[in-house]
Structure formats: structure tokens, C-alpha cells
Amino acid sequence: MRGAVAAVAIAVSLMRLSAAAFAEEGTPIACSESDIRPPSTVQGTCYKDQSRYQAEYLCAHQAYRVNSSVEQPAVHFAINEVEGGGDCGVRVPEDVKADVVKAIKEWKPYLRDHARNWSEPFDLKEDGKAILFDSIRKQDGKCVAFYEPGLRILSVSKETYVAAWGKYKYILRGFICKPAGQTMDAAGAVALINSFTWRGK
Image 1 (cartoon, rainbow, N blue to C red):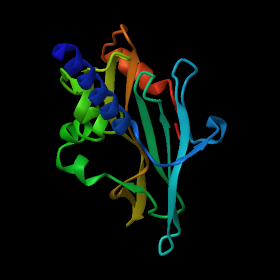
Image 2: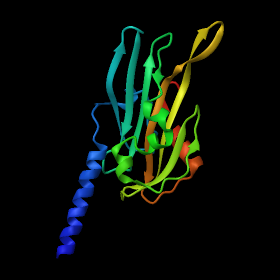
Image 3: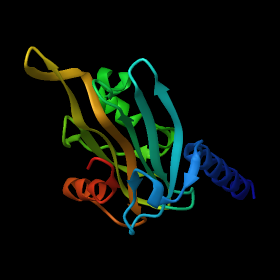
């Protein structure tokens, strides 16, 4: 009897942990209105997060993401982007500067609480990295977590194009899990990431 009660308590705790890991603020929008869109094979809701504006640089920062519900295979695919001229751009996050692999593994509560058996990291475009992992959730198959900057901002200096202080037009971060029982290798992970459509791709 005590064993059964303990098992129920553990199951409830895991459900609460999963719900907390998936909790995010933001405004749900139609994916047709989003700057990042999932393929038809991926279940998720599109969101627009709070925008901000840097008046001194005339830069508009925007953030969109695709999130699954707690009952679905885990998906959190986010894009941070900037509109504006000159040196407007998204800076490389401080945690990525310090240690990109650690930043990928610890980016969201879901990864800290559910990810196990991390693979060796492999390269994506523009200094991006991805890592395969297993999830302890029954809804999830093989998963990939990633960081990928895109479209480096260039400034004109003495008639030479130079990187504008490590800025990019957009930065992608996220994790995607295949449905339960499905596996994935590095090539499949890259294909899965690229199956999403985003502005500037």
C-alpha cells in the first residue's frame, strides 16, 4: 500500500515538474503571423513575446517561439531578432559567451530537469552547436538542444566590412523531441531543426 502511495506521489511530482518546465509567458498567435513556423509534423503553439525598442539606435527587438503543451513531445524553438539599420543586431548571450555547451544544456528548466545522456556536441551554421539527449518523459523520444546564430551584422569601417561587436540579425535557441519511441542521429537533428521556417532563413 505504501509503495502504491509513493508511486502516485512521485508521478504527481513529475507532472508538476513537467508543467513548471513548460510554463512560459507570451501571447499566442496564429503561426501564419509568426516569424518562426513549425513543420506540419511538429505539434506546437506559436507565441509572440514582449518586444522592446532601442530609441538611440532605432532598433526594434522581437521574439517569437513555438512551444508544445506538456502532453506533447517537447518543443521549444525560439528566435530573437532585430529590425533596423546600421549596427542593429542581437548580441551573443552572456551564458553562450562563457560556455556554449553548458548554456545549451541549462537554458530552460525542462533541460535541467528532464534531459539525460547528453551526446558530444556537433556543429551547426555560424558557430552554432547542437547536442542530442534522452528525456525522462514518456511523451518524448530522442531529443536535440541547440544554439544557432544567423546572419552576422557587418559594419563599414575604413572601407572594410567588419563584425559589429558580435551581433547577429537573429539568434535561434531551443530543443525538439521526437515522439516517444523514435530515435535520431546528428544528421536527423539538423534536418529537424531546418524543417522549421523562420524569417531570414
